[in-house]
Length: 466
View 1 (cartoon, rainbow, N blue to C red):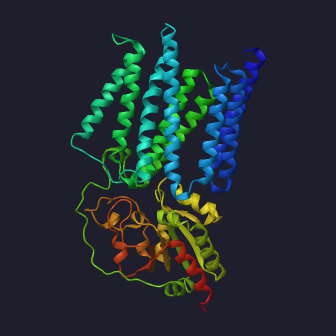
View 2 (view 1 turned 90 degrees about the vertical axis):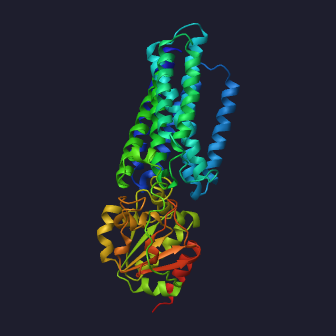
View 3 (view 1 turned 120 degrees about the vertical axis):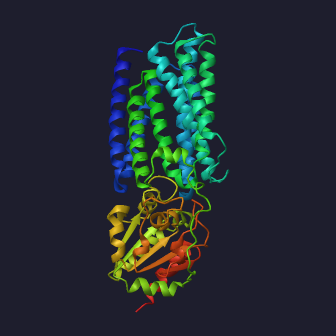
């Protein structure tokens, strides 16, 4: 590479780094998230372009074909995926990133070894780390995808001695990593391959016991691991873009994981090893009461004469694709002078920020969205709470039933409102697999049916209320 090409490449890499940083900063709010995503994507396109131009390639035809194929698959997936399937697509793409990082590091190390040389420590140490973390992220993300896609059960999959097996396997992987760096009777190639395969097995075993209700946390954690793997790959290749971008993803993913774990009042170790949704099974207390079904006309009347209404969205909103209808309801109520707010639980849905993304897609103003800590004190002063497809994040057993598996997890305290209307298809439990006593409380009314249809009928019925 000439001096000009080298300088141009580094200059483009600096521009890419700045665009990625600004892009991530703009992801903080839905109002700027789309432009932030485009900025970061454009930056990575610049880096990819200059790399293809000035970095020596073995086979241009193969690289071009792979570039077109990958871009085509990514574009098709992004444009056709349903919002309900967005969490599993995030898990799938995240796993691909971790797997790619592991393969690049493994390939670079093997390339040097096949030339008869020993990789320098500046390559072998981050290379072994990348193979370990990248393979764990890849395999774990594939299991998360399978759970979310319901290819395997969403409930925790556990067996006796699981934690001991995890610890022993991790210790063996550390030994394999040390041998891959230092060499030994097996050489360096064999420990590297053992490290890659063993890490994939560990990633699978670690995510299998994670319950469906913990998926937002585990996806965030796996995302941070992929970022760390990408950053380590940057050290292997001497690529500044990978180092900075990977570090940003790893750091932001780690912070988000900590915030979400704190929101659930559970340490990350409990998420990984607690088998949430399966522990304490059978200890959930039975709550007396009866189901009180209602009609759209009755709910429309309640809403029309309310002073304050809080809407609590859940995964059922995504399944029904009813975000536009819930916005129409908000507009109709505000036209009658009703104060409408949205209560957002940090782990509602199947991925971090799932509800925020859905509502932003329907152009719900961001200032109408209230986080859990901000909205909980308002429920006692709320006339009607409309729960749209949310289960576990509104379960009062988390506060008052020590025998419940979710006891201690902060929830939206909707039961403190004067009237609670729950939109659900049936009385089936949520993703955590436990019953919700909220549905049997005196102030609760159940509006059964598809959320999209029910919300559309509510908007129509509101016009007929004098």
